[in-house]
Amino acid sequence: MIKIFPTQSIKQLDAYTIEHEPVASIDLMERAAHGLATAIASRWDAATPFVVFAGPGNNGGDALAVARLLALKGYRLAVYLFNPKDELSPDCQTNRDRLQEVSGVDFHEVSTQFVPPALTARHVVVDGLFGSGLNKPLSGGFAAVVNYVNASPARVVAIDIPSGLMGEDNSYNVMANVIHADLTLSLQLPKLAFFFAENAPYVGEWQVVDIGLHPGGIERTATDFFLLEEDDVRPLLRRRGRFEHKGNFGRALLIAGSRGMAGASVLAARACLRSGVGLLTVHVPVCNNLVLQTAVPEAKTEVDFCEGTFAEAPDTDDYQAVACGPGLGMAEETEKAVLELVNSCQTPLVLDADALNILGAHRNYLRRLPKNAILTPHPTELERMVGKCQNSYDRLMKARELAENASVYIILKGAYTAIVTPEGHIFFNPTGNPGMATGGSGDVLTGLLLALLAQGYEPQKAAWLGVYVHGQAGDEAAARLGQMALTASDIVDALPGAWQTMERTSTVSGGQ
Image 1 (tube, rainbow, N blue to C red):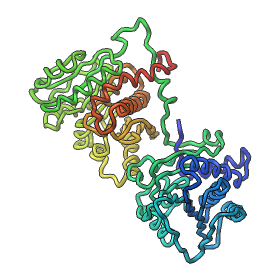
Image 2 (cartoon, rainbow, N blue to C red):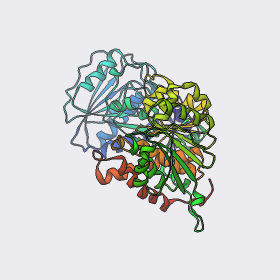
Image 3 (spheres, one colour):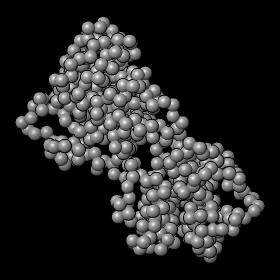
């Protein structure tokens, strides 16, 4: 699992490494520069013209060290060090002096007048103006430099973080004055800002460069933010004993569908059955019964008294898990039935889609949610429950507040789907692709989570495993079919392969 630290903690990690390795700060910067230069050289050869923009702080020091290392490899570089206050950080000053000893570098130290170089589509700009410690928007001359770079056709590589972008909250930033990077080379660990949709035009592709920060410091430093990895998820999958039977793998109840929306219940049911559940019952309105019996013969149906919608909250005591929401609609009788279910259900519960929209219309019921229930909103569904959000950071913080106050898990869907726990921890998922942005994809996730809860997985482990495998199935489907043509049914069809991959490498036998 990769920790994601607030920017203030990253400074502490640098200091811990310097003290406990021990290593001089200038030598740590040199180590970082070697990693950065190697990453850059792996993408562009020495025939590529480079322009390096360095600021007066340590981010500028990194950039100057990278320029020197690239020059020693035969790269052609023009370097602009911006020093308007005649006040360089000690390590930046040392790297300036070192760079000036290297021949063949077109070096400029800018204190007042800046004559910008011509930037063409052949050029690569290395952005080393400001790093992750920035705490106010760029303005004045530095903002002008950023705007000049952004207006050019050159490709841009940002060191650690695009200049002008803050590491976490950009709610009050001036985004017009943020570098648009094509590639961001983040030092040691990713930044929280990388996981927010509105920052994608600034961050571009991002890659972590290992600079050897002290592992003890990383382990000791607390954070609420994490990026899941395969090794965190694969051991969660239990092996099946030879003598186990369907009763050992749980009875699940899925409440889904309405007139014209039978497909949502079919997708969720198929995903549930493809994810190891022992027995599945689907609660359906009368009009959808034949559809479910035909499309998903492995599932039982429980027929609501209502012809076209969910109107009767069923008894859930005989089930190990319940999921409610896909394709339900917002009819008045459905609202009453969903709220009654929330009030009465003591079984592990997944709420999705219209069940969440109904909660959004009756926010007082959020306090009555069963403890450890799993809510799976996309951003708009979340905002119906927590109010309008300014940006992704604000949305994530409000999701965390809801998870803590209601003691529930929230799976905030999207690129890097975020799993928010009742303790306020947030886990980002690395699997999945834009092809999954298609109707029914969330229904598949609901069915998958339902199956895992029914089998007795704890909610957090079910969320980790379910979200990861859902994304992995989407990735396998996209690899075969492409992203443009991907449908939710393709994700269901890819689930067996995704589970097979997990089964081959799982090391846990039984237990939680």
